[in-house]
Image (cartoon, rainbow, N blue to C red):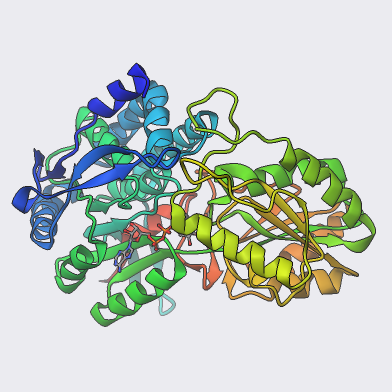
Length: 487
Ligand code: NAD
């Protein structure tokens, strides 16, 4: 390990942050964090127990009264300072992210900026929480509506975007006046701990944000969901876990946001600019090694241009260099763990057994770390498991279609509904197909939809609720109506 890597790892607090203090977990237990590029342990982090989770809830609940009453401008300025601190520390945060998650450094830098942008956006939104006053239909009374923070919010985040998935929840929650318990994914707790230090430096009062990494998310979550002081759950992760947590929350009538899995279709029509489609396919497929909920999962290409698109994509994918994300020339990092490799192997193996052909890649890389070669598959039959499962790896299966109607039918034939990408130069078709797709987001001639100023989220089994945009803060606000006698 290089000096700068050891230095950045040594600089991170590895304890829990509860009620304004860094503390060991009850019983002093820790768990290991691995570098997926080597399989080596890079840190030992305090392992929160259910009892620690309740301490975090005590702290967040006590801090709520005061924090929820602070001036919006006061909250805005703390969040804005945190934005500036994240950007000042972009290089260290990016290195930390690459070490615990694997993505190449340039992408990690991009995620740090994207993560910070949620703080910039919500620092600006904190001062725009509004209500209405109007005459009721009978003319005798008046209606006043106002918005108030929901209370203590519990946030569960995944490993694939270790910083941005946190800031995209914490930014609006703090702006609204909520207090927070953050539980990062066990594979990547270090970015959340680094973020906590930044929040302290930005002047966040004690108890407003608490961070509890744990190797036992189910046990920690159980006690929190049982406690009536918790008022909001915001979850980003797999559909299976999200579905289970939504069920549990329903019983408690908790406010819930669910950002779940995806199975994005990437549709290339015969009138598309093919070079642009290939450029954007590289982003939609290879950003984060394909480990993104928004990753293009199925390439649906008009039969007349499918060969050209497949050849160009395979040539670009085949030229990528795999390697440790910290190496200057590597543009594809490792997958997160052995299970991820096994899943990709199983899906590719099944597609090949059913008749798919490999244009490039098609196998894992032997040796240390969890590397899988960028892969393009053609002639993928519609009954292959790869068409219905979230791949979460660098594999592009290409399926052809004959006309627009078939493209839309194939695109919608999935339980998921997060994002779809459309490539066409026909404006009417672009708008018509955008309306027909059963997704929360559409990328039109562009392979990326992430933007702090836009409402990110899905429909169907991809969940509900929106993060970012004007809508993001509403997830942390309750609406109150005051009926006024005007006579
Ligand atoms: P995961 O569901 O296994 O884990 C996500 C989080 O849930 C982690 O923090 C984990 O510790 C926690 N968790 C796991 N089991 C739990 C339980 N029983 N109770 C409480 N918490 C539990 O998912 P993952 O593999 O870490 O993340 C990848 C998934 O996240 C993919 O499906 C991806 O599409 C999805 N994702 C969605 C979005 C979005 O915005 N829609 C963004 C990023 C990732």
